[in-house]
Image (tube, rainbow, N blue to C red; front, side, top):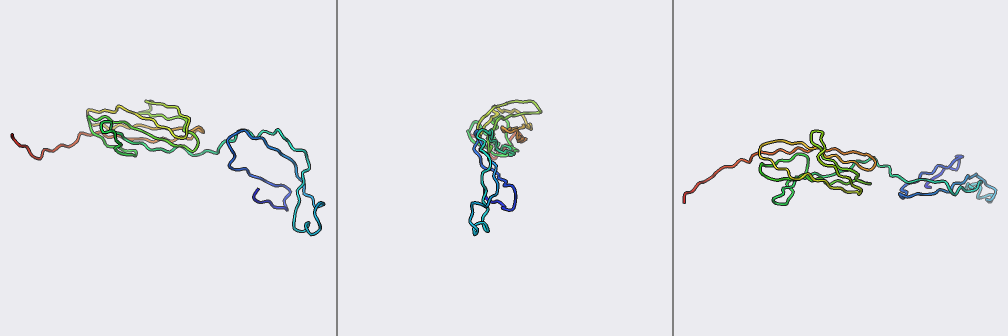
Length: 184
């Protein structure tokens, strides 16, 4: 208890940072009494004395975190041929005849429970997870012509906080210019 007002009839206590386990409370009624204090102490102190037996089996229950924060993450475009990340974000530029993978890495303050990738409302991938971080990948993206594709990356934590990121992948034909032709 950080502070109490001795002029009030009741003491209010707020518990913080409780462990995530089953806890039992011990409750007892208190009354204000001054009879055990000297005359000088009665002027500056207030004595609270237990006036009932303790309750030893009151279950405080599982301590759930007040989780209102949705998972956060990064989505990156991975070029498979060179085994490197091209860019991170929500809008990507790629070229035809190249194989790509869209990778997403998610973090939550409690647990990333589920990750989903959808296109036009259709679920392409779904992955269950039970840790603070999770990864889901959409691989084998290969295009032979110019196109623009959108994918929804949806992540749900254990308290049903949802994050939805829409990713746009634009595929183009690269501009090639011949600078010099030599005959041999």
